[in-house]
Amino acid sequence: MESERFKKGWQKLMEVDGALGEKVINGLKDVSPDLGKYIIEYSFGDIYSREALGLKSKEIAVVAALTAMGNAAPQLQVHLNGALNTGSSINELKEVILQMSVYSGFPSCINAMNMLKEVLAERRTQGVIDSIGETATNISSDRLELGKKVLSSIDNSIVDKLKNAYDDISPELTQFVMEYAYADIFSRKNLDRKFRQIATIAALTALGNAASQLKFHINAGLNIGLTVEEVKEIMLLMTVYAGFPAAINGTNSLKEVVEERVANK
Image (cartoon, rainbow, N blue to C red; front, side, top):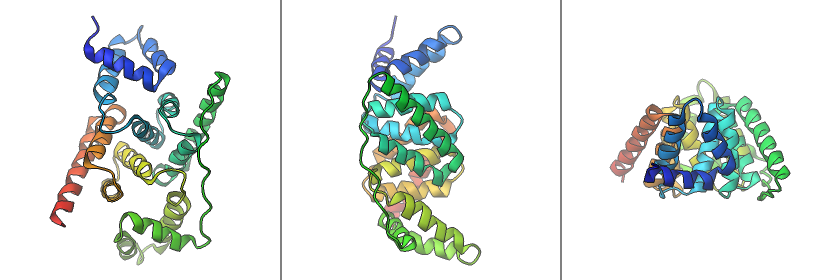
């Protein structure tokens, strides 16, 4: 008999991923039905059914993580659909993917953008009309100053810290962080900055190779209005896509940030 977790998970799977999610589960029936069962019960019954982080935010986090990891194209396809199903616009997803160029490089973004193109074409053949969303805004001609301003808006001490850390060995690194990451990418206004931090926190947690940068973005997320509970949910969500070790390390980073913020009050 189906458990209550299974029933709740199946309902949430249909809400998020619809027919593509069902196709994934059906594809596992002849080789590992238990895997399909655990996907439903744990991923969607236990994790996706939690309410501290909305479904749109969850799917933005997953798209960012899968784009950054770059090793799960079929799952990225499912969750690009899921993100559109749960309220993300086309341009918001383009922004999430574009932002990952800062954290996982251009090849991962090219692959994800091509996957989004395929997903949108398939949805159009099914008669689905997705919201295009807002167009990206033009940036200031002084990219360096704009980058400093945007970065300072999420952490008012970080510009000086970067300059002190790298200007004696690679001032170009500081310059390009400001100009590309924050002027070219983060300054664009067609993705809410909370979603930008959710995407970055998820990606850095999933990648698991940049603890100091993860702590910075957790702190930045809290600075602009994310709650500790919402960041906890991102970590729990990453147990599904990057595994428990990545989520444990991410949660430890969150714990350190919270303790430091309390100590500095």
